[in-house]
Amino acid sequence: MEFPDNLKYTRTHEWVRVEEDGTVLMGVTDYAQDAMGDLVYIVESVKAVQDVYAPLTGRVTEVNDELPNSPEVVNQDPYGDGWMVRLEIEAKDELEELMGAAEYKEMVDDISP
Image 1 (tube, rainbow, N blue to C red):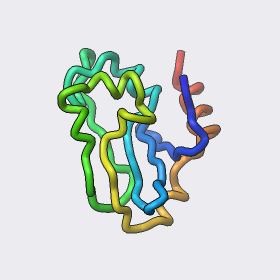
Image 2: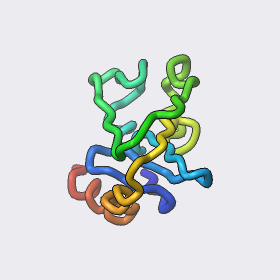
Image 3: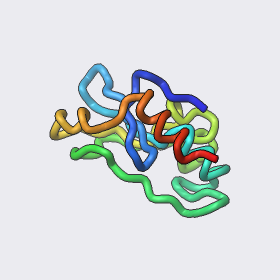
Image 4: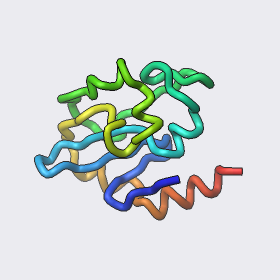
């Protein structure tokens, strides 16, 4: 399971990455995609329908148009081509409330069997 250091993480298993232009890409973590199983529809898996929460206050400026036709990309590359939305965030200080990779990994280790 991957926990890239250049991302911030939520307790509900979303990740965010601040881009050079100040926008934020968001998706679900490797742990989340693994727990959901094969995605068949964004975001509905063979196991359950799953909500995805916006971890920051802002406005969606772009959605990943590839996912409706290829939801399996989230399983194959959750931190790359499997991103879900781009946000223009309103309160950058909210980033401070998110977890770093080490803290998120520790949380996942605590809940994993």
